[in-house]
Length: 260
Image (cartoon, rainbow, N blue to C red; front, side):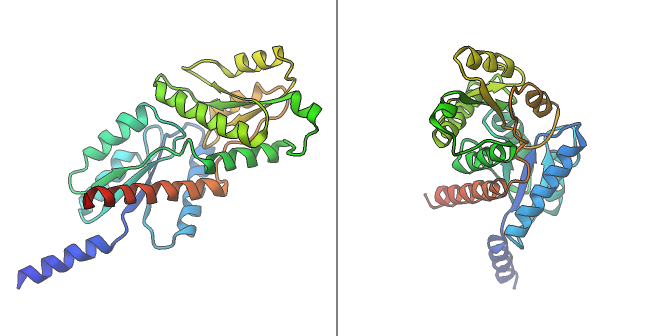
């Protein structure tokens, strides 16, 4: 009598969609938490019925460890952790996988960060246009224009690789130079990149905010802009689409691994 019940429960578990756990960094700026929550609402609206949870690495509740502990206590769910981060680095390589490994009863997969990806570039370009960037520049205007892609910065060299790739993809879309620069830790800084472009005769330089939500770094980088500065990516529709894309890719990779 017990064996059919066990088979039925296992089949039910396989049929359930794994919980999407969006892993945000956390910020002391209250606007960051409200932005992330609004982004998750968009994700839920796009895929009704998909369980969507939030976990922070630090500074805000719920912490990722607490979200996973709650899922672990229920013991009947799988989860895909999607970093709300725009490049590889210590959080993606160490903090998130270690938190996932500590969950005993929940089977977890960790997705790739959001960047680099064309959908991320869609959001960056749209925010620049909102700030006043014109896509119909004259050749003379284009020759004087450039963009500094302002990111948080990391000591991990892979983070710089990813940010440079995002800058390259954005440059291909804009037709002007895009220079990656950083708010902390890595070089060049945003002011240094701006000075270097000015020395090359680029006096129409925009700062593209490569941040997911408002905060100190995004504010400081925007204040350094000599011309226009775009808003953080926040709730742009491409961001919700990208979170779901990373979720789907992680599930597909897991299915391929199981089949092999």
